[in-house]
Image (cartoon, rainbow, N blue to C red; front, side):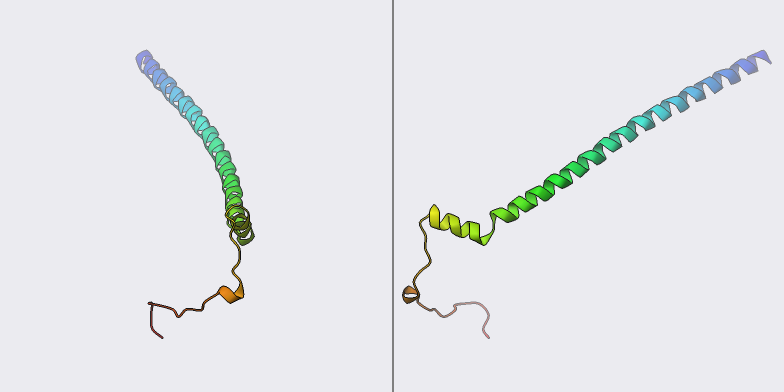
Length: 92
């Protein structure tokens, strides 16, 4: 009977250690999950800022300003424009 009690005590202790270890691991994983969620939120904010910046860089007034200032381009005069007929493509 004593041996059975000792064996059961040993089994209970091993199960207790297993539960404690599993709970500790679960807490660690939950903390890591929380850290990753925060990182996700930060990346979403940064992505939004980058999209806004990208749309700003591609606006027509900015492109026109660069073309005039840096490349010396200008809008052609109406007299110098030559109308052309469309070539290729689907016939109508």
